[in-house]
Length: 323
Image (cartoon, rainbow, N blue to C red; front, side, top):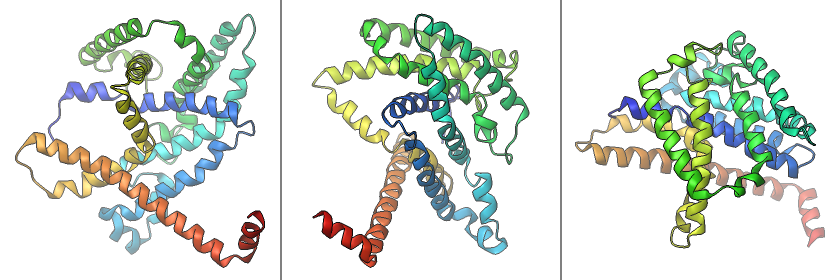
């Protein structure tokens, strides 16, 4: 692949944006699911995807079975670069209910002040965990207790969801223009500064866990995305675009986890003369292949459930009673 360093620099905010959205959805779902079990129940499912990819990582299969290092890769979440995210997700999912309660305590006349005051200890905790914690040498935020500075954007995502009703008060077109201009300006600043500003603050330089550079861009892109997709959804001629992206969004986690399998182990075996065709095939294979794997695992899981139900007389009796 050919790389443009400025485009790479612009893309660094993506995981930070993902965690911000995770905070938003966690707050909204916790508000519906009062028992707070929804994200905890997702943890075993996420671990299943993680375990499956170990077997699919062809490069390491001989090592895994010859010297018995399979458990090491599972525990350290390092058989593939993106797998640090599994442990990061698990940590934030576990604390999501407690953080939801803390955000809920902020209400009344001084609600905004209370949220700012709560933000201070969260930043301090993120500072400590980013600089003084290391879990199994897992890459990035996955190896930091509570995700390091990802805890900050997770909290900010919850606040954005809490005040989501206020978003509709602003003019959509003006919001798009302002956020896009800010995004372009901040991108230009990033290309010139190249994380220098992050080296001047206690979190240190780097994009994972994120510092000021990536956190700022992710917040800007939240508002830009909201304005753009709201506009597209309101127009009946472009509504199919948001419908497709919404469908694709169901697989973003699996695309993130599995794309390296295609990029590192399969696509490198082929050569392409045209860079445009190469990009089309690379992205098509990484996205389409990841969705295909996710669907095959779901089918296998459904088949196993059918087999278990068929061999379980109690399950069959319960179904007959319900009908």
